[in-house]
Length: 120
Image 1 (cartoon, rainbow, N blue to C red):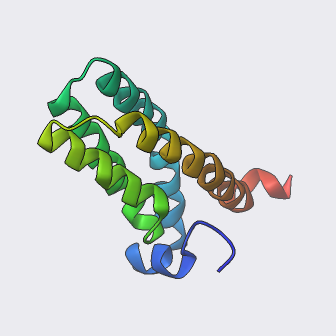
Image 2 (image 1 turned 60 degrees about the vertical axis):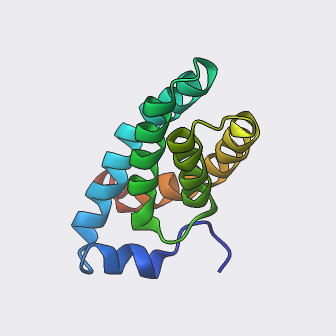
């Protein structure tokens, strides 16, 4: 598989409904920027509970798209928040941002291909 998204998994996660998959992708685009900002802010302020919550929520959003590296990195940050161990948090967050930078364009392309405006 060349992309970051496991589209077979994604379609199965929504029961094969193309409309629901579009809705999941749209909701992801609404939520993930706030979650990324929250994770970064939590790391900077050493807010362990908040880091755990933001990372856990991002991990949940990503689960629809299969076992992504971004999901794994979110899980690592969640555990760091749970355990109050932030030594590697900045490094892992940087890796997460890199993964998101390659995942988001794939989701954007999918959303654009499903948009009714593409026929106009």
